[in-house]
Length: 243
Image (cartoon, rainbow, N blue to C red; front, side):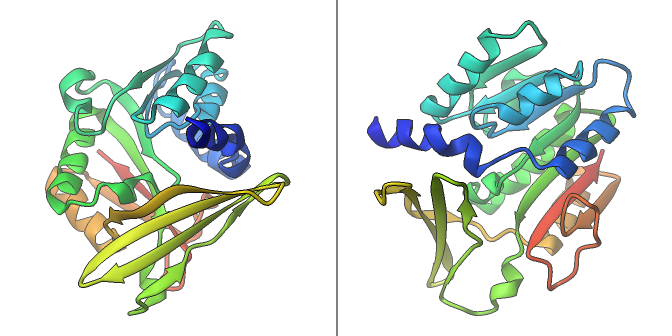
């Protein structure tokens, strides 16, 4: 419990709202009749969803970490807006959420890495395609693992705030990748957030392949929310898929 609550305390600082990220979503929302309907897979504390709901969007967030979900729902209860959060896995979203309903679905902050089984990753693309309205968008962000070549151990970019730092490490063992993550607070205490958790290093090529198989009509790959074109040297992948 202490670990979960500690992570929640620093979560919004470590995963802040990036202005160009918000601008991208706001511009895409204008393509749909109001209210645009948004779904966030792995919504964390719901900070970004709260901001989008303030712009008259109809927003749903799903999260499978109880402590993060509690924080998201506390935020929701203080506002009169179209905003809701559910404890739900990405595996169940196509069973319980409305097909053809959402204008924009997103999976941000590298959360897609934890879908480590290729069959389930393909299911994710098929399920989101089903949930999207005609000409809707799927937005995914993740690291560009091609930068690290054949390195067996490496670190992803640290996330830092005034009060905390989040360190992420990748180990490759016998063709399988594992993620570990440590949180350091301002008083020097260290907390393990993830320890040797299996992930899949999803590539730009796989995104294009899986999107095509699922029936998406368009795939745009960027290196940031400024829509700078993706290249093999890009640190990040921002994938914007159109249904």
